[in-house]
Image 1 (tube, rainbow, N blue to C red):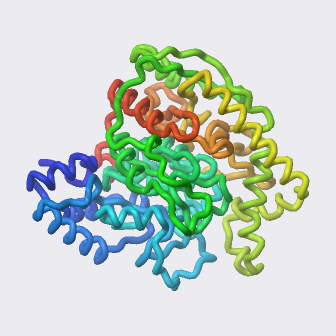
Image 2: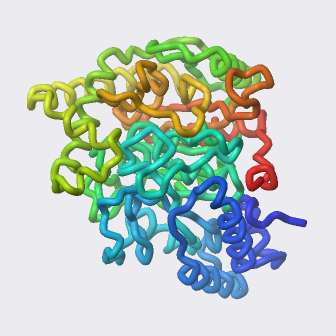
Image 3: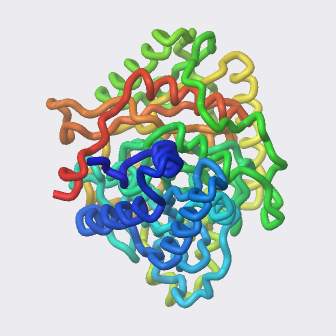
Amino acid sequence: MTDLAALSAAELTSGYASGDFTPLDVLEAVEARAHAMQPRLNPFCRFDPEGARTAAAASLQRWRAGRPYGALDGVPVSVKDMILTAGMATLKGSKTVDPAGPWTEDAPSVARLRGAGAVIFGKTTTTEFGGSPFSTSPLTGPTNNAWNAAYGNCGSSMGAAAQIAGGAGPLALANDAAGSIRMPASFGGCFGIKPTYGLVANHPPSAAGNLGHVGPMSWTVADAAAMLSVIAGPDPRDPDALPPQFAALIDEPIASVRGLRIAYSRGLGIRDPEAEVAAAVDAAAIVFEELGATVEEVDPDLSGLFAAYDVLRICNRAAGILVLPAEERAKLDPVVARVAEMAERFTVSDYVNAIAERQRLKRVMLEFHSRYDILLTPTMAVLPHRQGIQQAPGDMHWYEMNGEVWAPYTFAFNMTQQPAANVVCGLTGPDSREAPGLPIGLQIVAAPFQDALVLNAAAAFEAARPVRRPVFAEVAA
């Protein structure tokens, strides 16, 4: 029997065209899967059954008339609870946001999904204001890993990762200001891409300023490519949005890296990953050589990255927290609230210097990509964390936990605004220091507006080293 909830978007639209099943059939299967996994994984914070059914019914009529809108017509899509969605509250994982709304506005990416006929059925959980690396929020509690529910998904798109890996629909809309698409995609075991900054219009602005990008998470690379083509484009509400960048987009990835010049950096010159991660990404780099690329081990010069990123992230996030009344700030996750205190040590000069350093890093990476088409790195330096890990009192840096630099590879490319993706490159083995069968992620990075190149490379790796999805019976057990 076909598992409609776990089919790819391409498989769904093929089935709609042939009449094997309908968007209403698929919506029913996805909603059933979502509700079944909710008690164990907690990927969702709210649903819109009436709105989703109306959208699915309209899609059915278009398919029957032979006039579908395109590759996402009738395809179920979730939206992260950081992104405005008309008809559903966007509470950002926080008790400080009034659920009463009104919730009448779609973010640009959500509006484009609706315009393409996608069926938006629910909102996925997030850490509070996207400001914590832990897989929990004060509002919704912990969200667990679909591969092993004793583990978290790391980062604010935690619900989207659990949804996709658990097989409750093929696509999730998410955002990323330090790695919040790629980090949960790595720990949670799915595909996700942070596009070139400005490729996808964003409104309202990210709490992290222009560090924040909007992009897709999915099981297959092809589904993410189709979604990115839909959501890309300008919107008058976002002054940073770019005119259409057709060369950056690709409807169907070409699964080839033959002839590409690829740089492989095991640790970005920052820190080496732990042994099991290193072994998995070393093996992944060899796959690219086997596929016909030239691979050279080399580190870009990212000196100055940490200090500049700290200033920009902390000051941007603190601005949103400091406007809250004292009684509302008392409701915040302490990890999130701490940035308001940390921001007090920075001066205007620090902020201006951080912007200048960011520009230098952009120039460094542009020169780097004049020599290399793609950069490969680990997505995470460590294996997935067990759920419930706590941050010790004191300063909280996104990339550091209890004195360990554990997530140093993703935020560099928010600073440089390049496209970067995570693809699962292996699973922990029977002798792992953590549980066996947990995902390990490979990060694929390219120059700005080379999003299609990232997607092609990810598709080539996906075809060469497919990963078995978690069996839903095991996810729900």
